[in-house]
Length: 396
Ligand SMILES: Cc1cc2nc3c(=O)[nH]c(=O)nc-3n(C[C@H](O)[C@H](O)[C@H](O)COP(=O)(O)O)c2cc1C
Image 1: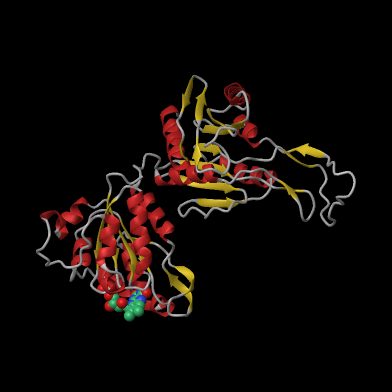
Image 2: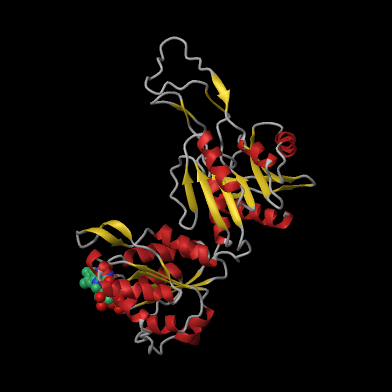
């Protein structure tokens, strides 16, 4: 996702330096060209060799080092940077950057960078809560820096509180959000549903399905990377909440219906990737656990068809996309759904085909509109999400 992008990773002298190694590796896996610039103190925690092996580039520390090829001089690094991320960021670097101090390779380069910049403060809670640090962070925010909020938990100094550097995956998400895609969906409101719904049988048991939410989460993240304002209505999943998305957690089909209807009127694009249970128990014994000995037959009733209701109430210019999970006659069944539910597009996938459907990290989609049918090859769910959004942007 970062092919052709030049990312400057600034590393400063905090105990969380080791997580910057993992971030460098994740960025390289996304095909970024990663230029690490370390402070001299950072090099006491992790050696430059580690970053050099991970990135294939010399890790820079010294502005006056003459032992380099011309293209790593601080102005050329700044000129070609698509984004700067400083992680971990010490109280010291935050203070220096907030006041325009340029006394080493990192601060000098960053001062010359016109690209988007993000910083991940990481320090002892008392240092973080000190008014001077808080003011410095606000100053950086004022100058347009994205501040990646520190996590709370047990810190290296033994104290418990706020100040932990977030996981490398969260830091990567920041870079992807800024640099991975052109912002062709800026100004659009996108509503995505994901995951399974659960229908209670009694206080202990429920009906559900195998959806893990991976496809819907990938779509929500991709739309947000493209600049859209995204709301994700999500059933229970094991996935981490996407950082730049407004997540509405729900449990049952009725919860999902209510949450979707509350947002639908404001949405330019609605993508229903959730696997909503079609049926729920007609009666739920709230206080008693159903007896399982003997007859287990349960009277069922249909849940409200969210997609059909959206199709019936589609507003002018709104684009409505559904998913269809099929085990046979995939194309015919999906085309029938497209017209019956008044959809603009349906993404069909066959759950019986290896590499498609629930749980796996890949999908094989066929994107069907009233006048077109596009078969996509097997791709990662992240790639499939972008291909689906490309098609929506092309068709609407
Ligand atoms: C073991 C150890 C751990 C440290 N961890 C942090 C930290 O997590 N955050 C921080 O702001 N400073 C931390 N410091 C203090 C910084 O290293 C110190 O302020 C230094 O001047 C920062 O230099 P730099 O910003 O140029 O890298 C730590 C110091 C030591 C000795």
